[in-house]
Image (cartoon, one colour):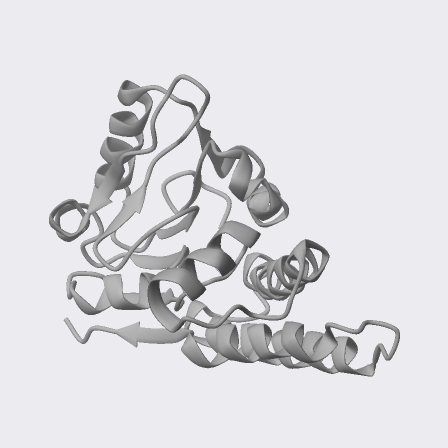
Length: 221
């Protein structure tokens, strides 16, 4: 799993997703942080398109049910990077892992990939906690920034440990979903056992939701 055409981890530059870096750093030269330039985004799209059908493509960043976002910086506005239309052209027969909000819904709109893992709504910042309450549920989760940071660390660790097993040829991609759930369960237990953390119940709830909204899909082509 070391050749650049076999695995590619892409992470649009964005300080709000820097906490995902430990996942990307597993992949060495195959971890690509996309800078705040239009041409850099197009280069990555071209690279994914040219990758072999057996490739594993990992995306780390922001997303919605219909697109994956690109980089964001002081002088560069975040914009659509990979849409459903683009996805259906570049991910044909590839394995994909999208660590982004609502990627499970995104995957429901595509049937060209070989197998894929996606997630539900991920509350990874106070802003996202507030947006959820103000735009969707009307209820603020009783968790502060420190609690959300711990939630992020827990699920990043779960994905990282599972991907390490994949990279060391101890598991197949089809088993990755189960191992992420396994490590999430361990993180949930550790959080709940820490009686000194007054937010442990809400952090555990976020982890339960993250686990239960995760999906594995496989297309029989």
